[in-house]
Length: 269
Image 1: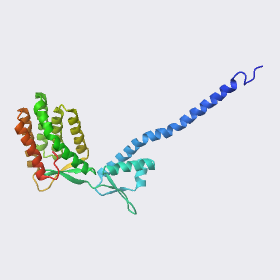
Image 2: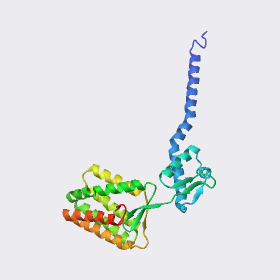
Image 3: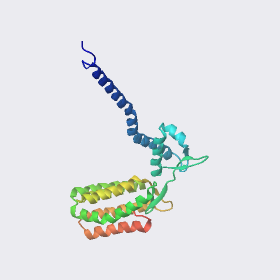
Image 4: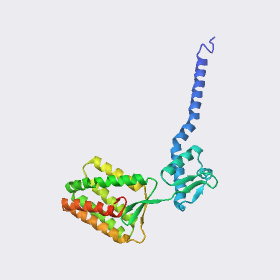
């Protein structure tokens, strides 16, 4: 008569038990792994929720204590701390310790001037100033490439972008005007056959745009007159590109940067 050991039943049962145990261990690990993988997304979601509160509040307004806001977001302490790190790095909130402390909506500092308006930036204002400076330094290279390589279709696109600028100027909307202005320069950059130059310009423009909160007029100055003047300068620049008038295009590029520098701490358009 065969024994359990003899027919291999016991080893098979042991193997089944081991397999079940390993499966149970894998199942037990899934929640922890899933939590780790979703933590960054939960931190971003919590940061977005608190940023919405800060955006709707007056600058300097108290948003709540850390515990209150963590409870509101329904996240762990670790996830909340990561969300807080994101918010502080973006200049959205400030943290004050002690009684009456907590999270407060950060002040928005208008730091970079655009002629008769200012760019209200988040905490990365130094990055923006540096990006603007480098961007303006490579503008002449982009204009040279556009003089050589702009097609009739390119010029038509530039004129359409000028129309967007004109509409913003007529509406006296500095925010829309500056963004349309950036769009025009991005389209000029796209003409260049140099992929490194295009990529560099796009990266610099992304830094400027992503950290600009708004464009604000400076009271007491004629912002409409200024943006109409800027629109006319860009029309002349596109005309020079269309006519392949290198001397005129370079002259206008120099005037573009000089006129901004004369009225501002950092050139931005």
